[in-house]
Length: 170
Image (cartoon, rainbow, N blue to C red; front, side):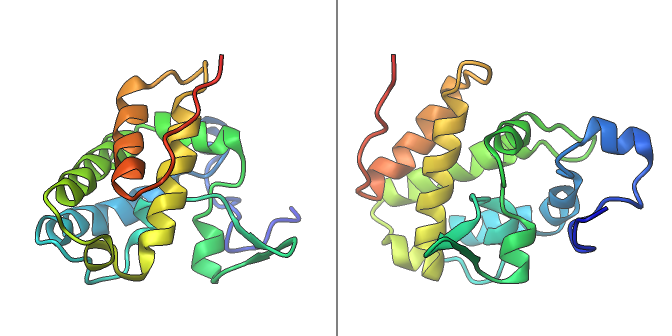
């Protein structure tokens, strides 16, 4: 296809591509590798390794109409609302992306509530945390997702980071 090789899933069996049209499997191995370590770092009050691309997904970073960011940032961006909603629903025998994200949001909120400084907790990834929480809160609020638990966890992180409360639509 016309996709770049870094994002292609042409080597996946057809049935897998049909069941995973957004190639969310790209997150599964990374969650297996980094989730426990990330949670341990957050419990200790300080992010000290590189895992935010895989565990705090965001939309592509657009600046002046152009996508910017590293190749890793581009590979793990959630490119459409449909992909973000699928991320929140994706279950794999070894990883639930939703459960991991929810646990991470709850831990981050708890640490912020305890007075841990956001920059100490997340380092240079505070903007990514804000973007990820805001985007997935909005996606979790959509009628077809309707995930009140996720909305509440993301909204609490946003509030503790001094972001405006999400505007709830009709």
